[in-house]
Image 1 (cartoon, one colour):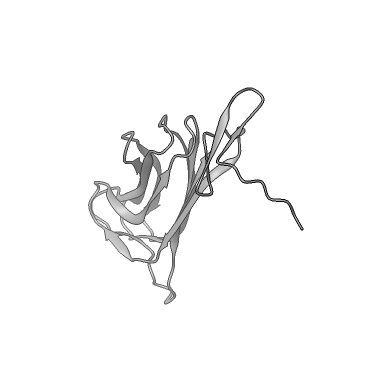
Image 2 (cartoon, one colour):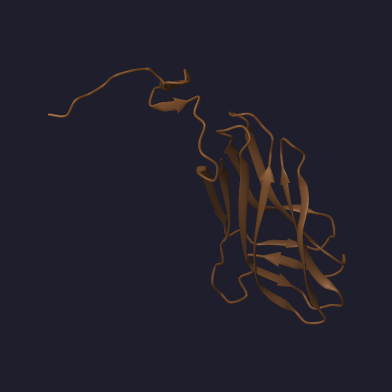
Length: 172
C-alpha cells in the first residue's frame, strides 16, 4: 500500500514556503523558458472589412498571469485571408492587449492589382510586466490598407469552412 503525506505547506531549506490550497500550488517560481500557462481559441466566423481603421477579429482570448516577470507568446493563424483586386489593396494586422495598452502592428499583406487569397501566420512575444493573478486579454485586429477594397478572413470561397486560431502561452 502506498504511503500518503498530507500537508497544506511545504517549506524548502532556504525558508521559501509553497502553499497547497485545494490542490493548487502557490508561491512558486518556475525556471526560465518553461511554459506555465496556455490558452487556445478558434473561430470560423466570416468577417469583412472595407475601412482602413483597425477592428477586432473574432480572435480574442484571456490568460491569467501565473508568475511575475514572465512573457506571453502569442501565435495567430488566420485562414481564408482574401484581399479583393485593386491598386495597393492589402490587409493589415495588429495585436492589442487590455491591461498594458499594448498596440503593435504585426504585418501588412498587399495583393497589388490581383486578388490575394491565402493564410497568415505570425507570432508575437509580449513582456507584460504584470503581477501574478492579473488577467490579460489579447485581440487580433485587422484592417483594409487602402480604404477601397474588401478584406476578408475565414473566406469560404472554396466552399469549405476555414478556421482561424489563436494560441497564448505564458513563458517563465
